[in-house]
Length: 557
Image (cartoon, rainbow, N blue to C red; front, side, top):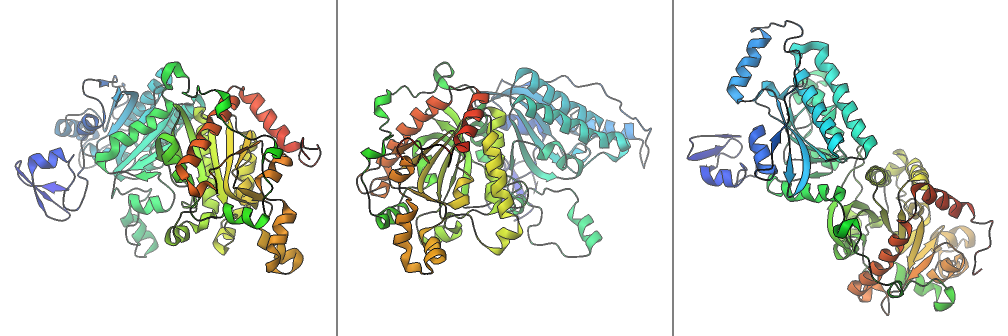
């Protein structure tokens, strides 16, 4: 990106001159246009890891010239020159250390060394870094910069894709967190193996990422590529990376992610020691007032009711939102991520309607696309891998009914989410916080414990939809709401929910902070209850819960 004297630096994108020392203080990011200058492996390690914590891993012995390859130069001579120019033995540097106090194993690539190409030296080093993470149970962080596989090593270089992917699979099986940071550029065999297999994939702004390079693609298909093609931002919009993170924010974002695998404070016990009498959960429907069905619907849909992100910001000590289904896109109607609730690491997923009209339109009024359910499923699998409880917050009129959603498999996405949740080997607590509409709500509500806020509703169909189908008259919606028995009192009476979370007088929208504190107490008690159960018992009890509906008579029926 940058050229010029040691004292002044010129940005190759916007040509702005920057004082050299300021440029270094800004982590080699242009203050004018924000372009991120390439870093060496050493610079990257120094920026990310804590000072004096870094310990290099032993460099593995590998076949240096397995093919006896010569182009314009013998391959050994190319290696010698690369080492002389960069001061590194290979295109990757592997170390152990700490990042804001969190132990980590890091594999950091350097594009200056033969274009960061993946050969046997890189593949073996990354694999050994993964094996070190496996042995020490420290998270693995991979920082990539590569043009692809190393041609001078032929099919042996190709095999490194399988070797490194296999090493990350072993970390998956062992429940060890992996995080990828994709920098400019990340292409070819690296992109198609360990770079994109992380549990969480971050990218630097403007980084170019893909399998085939744009020149190859244009020459092959003979079409002009779209604006911003293969940039980090392009891929974020298509659900392939979790976040685009400016360099200045990388350390705190990575630390927030690494924190989910750290023990909880106070000898690994969550800070939820409040006595059970403070939880205020209502388990007897007789304690709840009978409410007019129209009022129930109006309260559940109130535009100012707290959203998932409102509750997240109020209840969680830390939270890192993760995006994308790693397949086709990201759905703004479902948000999710990892954080800490009362000292305990959790995965939180929920519908997000928004408050004002522009946000509600942007988030499809909380009606999720297939990408949303697939994103939620990806986060649930991450929770299962790391052994984290899942909290889901449900507030949706239903799944998105559009043509695009149907084309991308809405029914399949919902069904897969329901099946996944039924067998997920970690505790799941669901709270119906507002509107629980049909299968779009159930797709996030197959849980060990299902709670409903006092002002919430939950139904097989909206009252309006029911009225239109059965009464052939949309104005019969209040009659349909009464017949469907959608309110919290009836949900508790029928055993659909286990307990009701009280709300401030007049509804959660009247005092969102008080509503959040009531929810905090309910979640603390409920998580304490379900996390005490072994995984096999959790799954068995969860399946029995849903097996009995329509067969056993609820307690209060």
